[in-house]
Length: 387
Image (cartoon, one colour):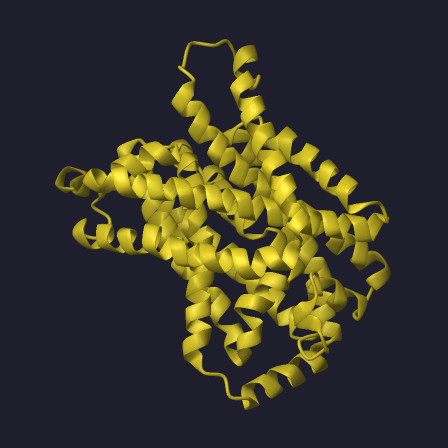
């Protein structure tokens, strides 16, 4: 472990870990609604199952990142065509459908959460708020993978520091209520089966975005950095999701909390420093929403642009400019997500993510497990020849 932290070139693995964090820390997570739906409502197991979900996600993402680097395939279509081998005509196209579903869902949840939070904070119409968020998403996503990774790192640090500032004082101040509610949950009957299944389902729909992760493997110096990035990712994601669920224990017994679109605001308003922490957590929610939408849209833009644009030598000035195809593709998907966001946050979380998890089990998890078994859990070059 000490050797891991002494490695000289840590910027890229940490950046990839932060991309994972910002992808997960989207509208549903930031609001707290997703944590209620998939963890907290299952009782005392909520202290364990969120971390289990992170470990599951890390294993599959590590395998994908390593495979991408070893086989030099970095947009998700090229990756899938190589990864699924002779079954790629079926599974590559199925994953296209999964990603389109995800692309419609995740950025839309981001728009809905960010728009609702901004509207409540500033008192301006929801429609205008979602338009403002769309502009920020466009500006970041249109400049490509490197900018997305750098933005993810910067936004992640801001979000993590902000969450610690908000959650830790409130956890300390409301520790008596938290321990009382944990004791009540422990005394209640809570079958572990449904809790484990819901945790697995949460990890499954998170893995629908595995295709956008592989583009970042190109910046690795070797495939070993795939493992390093996911170790960092588990530490970051597990720590934040545990603190978040622990903090929400303070309000878990409040009537109607499970039906609230943004339960984290209830926590802050009933805690300490609500006058300045309410706008702070609102800003963090908006940042989290924007970061997830950026990651999702950048993945599909990278896939389309790499397919239809022929690479040609460019000077530094031209390379810094997004192409017309990049601009129009990014704008098109932002408009699509903006439209879907008008359906509201809770319906998108409750219904959309549930279906997405089931689909991802069939298209990603089961094939990846088979691939791992036949490749000897990591001998990624061998499996390409054998499929």
